[in-house]
Image 1 (cartoon, one colour):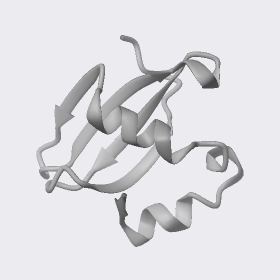
Image 2 (cartoon, rainbow, N blue to C red; image 1 turned 120 degrees about the vertical axis):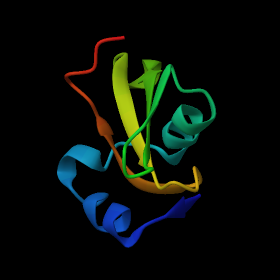
Image 3 (spheres, rainbow, N blue to C red; image 1 turned 90 degrees about the vertical axis):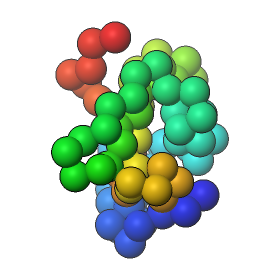
Image 4 (cartoon, helix red, strand yellow; image 1 turned 90 degrees about the horizontal axis):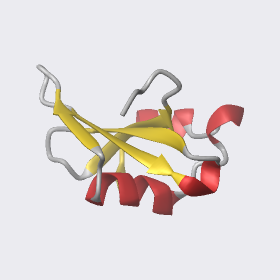
Length: 78
């Protein structure tokens, strides 16, 4: 999985330590919702049953391969 330096730094935050690479890869491959931002970045959301059904938001660079951010999105409504 390709990542940005920003992602590597934010991944050490306590609220993000439990996010598994497999969950990120699943959100990238099978998002429930996918939105392209005006700057070309791509937001993907996927439900994670292993995390009490919370929704994971993964932000990718415009190449659709490099992970820039990943976090549980409390405000997402499917």
